[in-house]
Length: 368
Length: 236
Image (tube, rainbow over all chains, first blue to last red; front, side, top):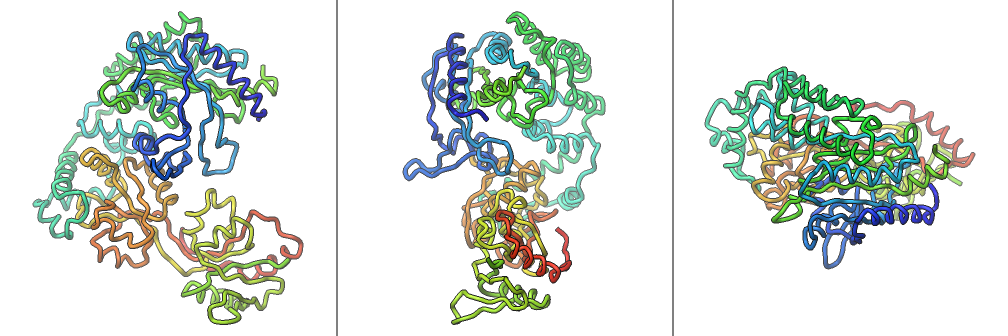
């Protein structure tokens, strides 16, 4: 890695570029309340962020990324539409030895705007991709909204759709549930035995016989889930054509200009994805209007499912081909995050970050 | 420099460690007064004995202050990030068996596996406004296990003792703790989830990988290792 001064100079140049694009430069605290981040990301964030204790403010985390504090700042006193830019260190605890840095710079650009999401997506992508053009990076785009829409449209119970939606960002668990709901995998034995037991009737008596009710989870909650499990056992499997279409959707990858047509074909079996597919087409047009050639983009429908948990629409990454380096830039749309963080209002938002350290490293090795 | 062996300083674990080495021709002895933590090694020239708390042995191995150490495999995996880059297992010693398990109230007749726990965690969070709490002192092991199985909407709360009582005391909804017979769990109206435990622990002889051995230490270790042979293996 180049020295910190070189990385900072790179970061400042990128930040100046974002400012010229009309972004207001903002700063955030390095110490962030742990509670908000834990509620958003769950317990896993403890393994990935530095947690520290403040004698008065309780648990705090060293800023693991900028998105959450920037959204919070916008929600408390931002005007609309808004463009923000920032630069600074983020901190990532590493549980394993290896090349991953535990402290590195990010420079970011975010847009909060209600109108024309395709134009905002394209503006963010162009803002990050244009200054990196000389590095000859692979440009990958995806759209988590397609898979979300496909799940929401499956011919199955609301409970099953909800369980799948909840695990979109955990691909293995998602696959296990999908196979089970589709009748492709048998129920685990523990479940079939439980169902036989519950079906014998009088759940209240069974709870009584199992032992005293201890803890915060009430008899009613136990009985309600028992009833839900019995109802779920009667649910027919997800139709085979929907299963294979959603499987094909998850595996879909190829040149971006071909994606809309392939999605239209999948939409015959998954009509719910039509809106998201039209959104992709509009986004490619908006990118072309900004001078980004769609033919230079790779589309991967599952891109961003393992690493970018708050993105729920457009996602993208700019990657140095053939090198063991983290992505040079990543970003995407996170409309749902603003709904969770902004008590009263949500606002569509899209943004991304560049890692100036990786940029400087590529320049230092004289990348093409 | 001697090759330093760290072993548990008291209790059943110390006695069984001494027996295990004695069966292999290495006599470990505590020396000095009853309460003094000093010892000697007979039958392995060039080795020195250090008596330590079992809970401190992983840290001492990682720091390279002891070259060999006997402790529970659970403690090494819990305390050391990337444990297998810092220490190497030389022998599973066949005693000190205990399972790290997740247990829930026995009255939860709708919960048998991690699948159920995950579904219950989602519903619990929606109903109570906070994530389902699991009391434990094994934070790293439990978190990695739950992540590997795709469990979400839980939170770990620290419990350094009397963990089985936290559910009745309303400070947790479930627990993760070490058990050998399950009797304490049953007495506290808890049941163990079906499926593989989070970790099957036993007393294990580890070697530190963090400090290079000098020539003398290497030859002591080579001579000792022939004695350890293949200790009885158990499933992991």
